[in-house]
Length: 403
Image 1 (tube, one colour):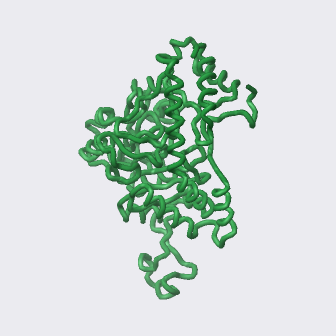
Image 2 (cartoon, rainbow, N blue to C red):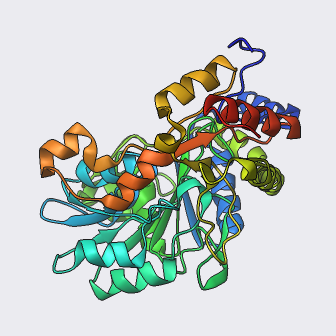
């Protein structure tokens, strides 16, 4: 099948409908395009959906991670534990603050940080924060990770960019990712390939009102508009209804990480569809599991995490390319020729030149085993059941296997 815009099946894409377009149109026709009522409403609805006390929305998932790190006052001399398998933003948020990264290995069959890989990586070290990543939508063992983090006096920031809508974790089937019962904060991404989208956008949930206030201040250049907080007390007399006509103060370095009302209007509309998105993704994953069975053991699903009901963001499978006698690059080229997009999640972050030059080579056998075998297949709600058959047929052909 030709690689055309009409026939190509990408590995991930947004799912928008008339309700989403209408929500954005209403925002465009309102008095606010940047920070207005949609921002506060989106925050309130996200807090309700995740079970958190507070939600702070921002311009991207990366911005959310950075705001969380900055709210913890990470800085030079601090160290943060990050899994070797993740998007680079998880590690970068520590480096933005001048902190160092200690990489942990992952389970080779799920790609997740585990309590064991965390303890091995940080034993004997001073760690200020731990950033577990809920890869593909599956939850880490947050009970175990949190216990180890607290033992070392470290805060926990969940990188939940893949996991909006995920419920349950090992030993805690009633938790919701983002309710922060095992963490200080959880960061989400609403990029178009994620489970729901606001175009670009992100959020951080927390149960700490002080952390939420710090992040809201930091996302807007750390500006203080409240006269009671100003060092120049003489300006307070010029305030009108508690606000000064032009004066503000910045007592620390802040960022322009605001999100627009337009994006939040779309995010609110998408959030209402999240249960449906999750259900459809789960149904597609179940269909994939059955359809790929004949390709075992060359192809097999990743390890399913107990007590977890994931809102699947990705459909990663593990492939023994050596056994099949074909390289991953060739498989991806053959799939693309068949009109099907695939992706790899992820190149181990310690192998990226920036981190390799900074810290030298590391030994992460679980991450390497995951990376050598993983391939993400198409997964998004608009896919038809027949698309799963199309993908698995193309994968079998690309691997020179028969169904």
